[in-house]
Image 1 (cartoon, rainbow, N blue to C red):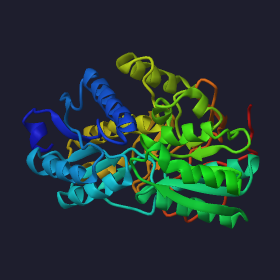
Image 2 (image 1 turned 180 degrees about the vertical axis):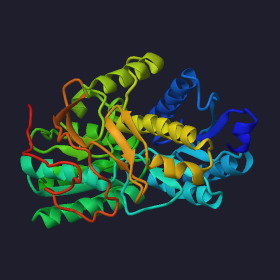
Image 3 (image 1 turned 180 degrees about the horizontal axis):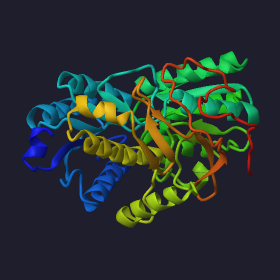
Length: 391
């Protein structure tokens, strides 16, 4: 065992999710899910009879502050494991610190792929676990002409590059690609609305994040577009962003993710019920929160197996563990530190709730480098049948 275990002290872990700033709505759900998992573990006796103790800071959606606080966690607080980050810019600010201290970051957010660090466990979706499924669904039901709208930082540029490749490889067209400030105001979407009117795309693929998401969807609604024919499709619009907009602005738009709070499995229902019992009946429970929740359970199991919080000890154990997450059984791929996940596509209904319209019922091996980009060949663990749709 390591020194903290021999001394009988709690297992201290770092937690870095923003409670303020442009992406605070979704990061708050990740923080809350992390604390829920820690409480569950502690109520069940902790890890090797010692509790997990979170060391929390608010990075305020600011990559520079993420970097500073990661330094504090690793250097001053002397934690070895950190749960945190939403935006890719924040992950990229934190990861060099984690690597320099030989720590381990658990990152619970979908991202653009094309990255590997021995010191990061990626529990959110890679592009072959959401972009491929979303593109296939959109081609099948809406058309092949895409307009891309994103926030001005790394993830939207890289995600749009992946989506553009998929569209063009399947004989589709990118009619335009444009970006708005990270803290965009309603007027910043005037050009996007004008382009939708002028260029008449079949689909608007949005990588707008945070508080600006509601402004975009409400501007789309005010312009009179019909999402039944011409939806906004987004990987970054979750229950957390929808909670900040009117239901009529959300209705009809589409998202792909491994988890939605309306998922009807027994494990998903228990998780959502526990989360809402703790944080309120109206609290949104997005995929980022579900990943934040299950990654704590994975880490705790790995610590127990290793008898240590030393990343060098727990990394081999993580590759041997499966966990019954709310989305389905998950595990870490030892080759790339990403997670086997269960992709789904959902549409927002009149109440602003996601209803699943395509559930392939396969667990998809992570392919963070997008080696396989065929819309019909993206799973190493199951075959994909025709794409059903429900109204």
